[in-house]
Amino acid sequence: MLTLKQINSDKEQVIAGLEKKHFQGAREAVEEVLRLDQMRKSIQQQKDTASAEMNRISKTIGQLIGQGKKEEAEQAKAQTSTLKENIKTYEQQMTEAENSQTQALLQIPNIPYSIVPEGKSAEDNLAVKAGGWDIPQDTSILAIANNAKAFDQDGASVALRDWKEEWNPQPAFAKLPHWDLAKKYNLIDFDLGVKISGAGFPVYIGQGARLQRALINFFLAEAAKDGYTEIMPPTVVNTASGYGTGQLPDKEGQMYHCDMDDLYLIPTAEVPVTNIYRDEILEEQALPIKNCAYTECFRREAGSYGKDVRGLNRLHEFSKVEIVRIDTPEHSEISHREMLSHVEGLLQKLELPYRILRLSGGDMSFTAALCYDFEVYSEAQHRWLEVSSTSNFDTYQANRLHCRYRRAEDKKVVLCHTLNGSALALPRIVAALLENNQTENGIRIPAALQPYFGADMIR
Image (cartoon, rainbow, N blue to C red; front, side, top):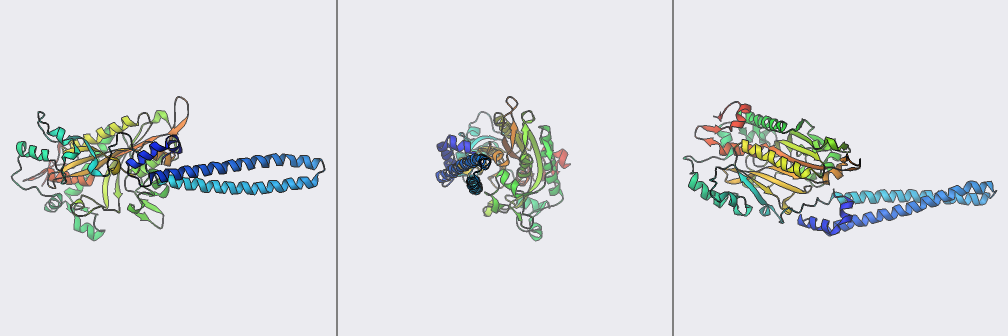
């Protein structure tokens, strides 16, 4: 959550940042936090005054008794008893004010960095890079493709389509969407998932299951090469963990909740892995901490309807490898760039067409200060599929988590920065791999994945 120091130091800048995220009632929310803080300070002052008065009177009681002034001593005792009760009341009022202030802060999202584009929705995201196509270097098509506004509502660039017609003619056969390929090669059974659990819980079979396992092992191996320590965390977390990373209270309705035990199924490995460092003071020389984890992820909200949720496009349960970093404020920008490079490298090795979007204020998550999405292009669906969000949260999560580090130079304890990213989420990667690599003789497996899959084709 935001710190009081942030809000008190530049209230108007904080409000402007919240408005950039299109947070409704930004000014009112900030003013309420400041009002509660002022109330807490006023009560603290009254408590301190009462404590000082009680201490002063307590010191006179013995003197009065020694002077034989028994009646005055009894009056002094009565005064101290009244002051003690007042102090208890003040302490209770302070606790209530602090709790109210914390609850108010928990409802306020993080403020975006200055480089975050203005905008209300995904339509205002800025495409900063595209890759994965063998586009001739003497054309301006790549530059055009880098502009998010150049992509039409179907997710395909008009410029890209022109290029494909000129340099990359359509294949002799019609490309099938992944749900048809899954049935053709007996890879995924969506109906069986409905029978066992419900919509959004596919069953992977044979080569489909092997492809899932190959991708998981490939992603984990690549993360290890880049210095990430693998973690195998629980896939259920307590309420404190949900609040720590900001899923609660913002995403409470989207998380599966185990009522009897008051535990939540994780929406991402970010939650348990980042919470490892809740209530911890780390040493500066140990940073940045780099962790990765493969987990199943669970999300109740399936999102929109139609083509957006068909097949693997949006699921209630899916596999994902997550990368998480805990860093210093001075180094977190470098960490973010390294994480982006890592995710991009995975997509390049999988030979998938991709683009990188810097999200606009209105499309960012509740907790992020800066976020980049990676999308892969689906040849059969003619649309972009999001496969990763890679975010810097600044001190927002760390303040909730009480995740701090001790600076080497002055031993001062300050808040860390936290970062995470999908590296990668499997469903849409599988969809793009199947659709983009289909041939008349089967589905080609990218060279980098073949050692993990054990074959060069799905037949």
